[in-house]
Amino acid sequence: QMQLVESGGGLVRTGDSLRLSCTASGRSFDSHAISWFRQAPGKEREFVAAITWRYGTLYADSMKGRFTVSRDNDKSTVSLQMNSLKPEDTAVYYCAARKLIATMRDSDYEYWGQGTRVTVSS
Image 1 (tube, rainbow, N blue to C red):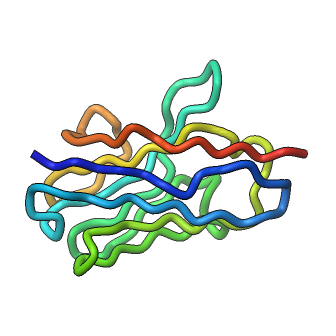
Image 2 (image 1 turned 90 degrees about the vertical axis):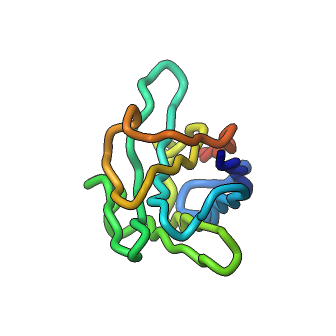
Image 3 (image 1 turned 120 degrees about the vertical axis):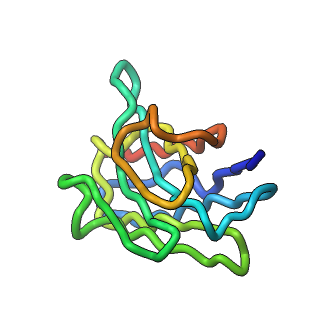
């Protein structure tokens, strides 16, 4: 079992930055890929970014250049740095884990956090 806890969400203004964290406990963190997904009100959950167990990264096209994902295996933490935030980034952000390889498909992920809410005002 792996437990994931997200933190860092909040209310910000357009153009602001925010850093989300996902902290894991339980199973071997360093052999898992960690991804971020988000779900806006009334919309389906969508892929945001991922980092593999070997520090490879993957981003959704709309996040490239604005979002940066990183991991610290010593702290069992993955961070998502979000810059130049827009109102359309408003959503609940979830981190998820799966063994080794990251994918963009949420059904591939075994472990999920409870989410942290990000609201970007215009």
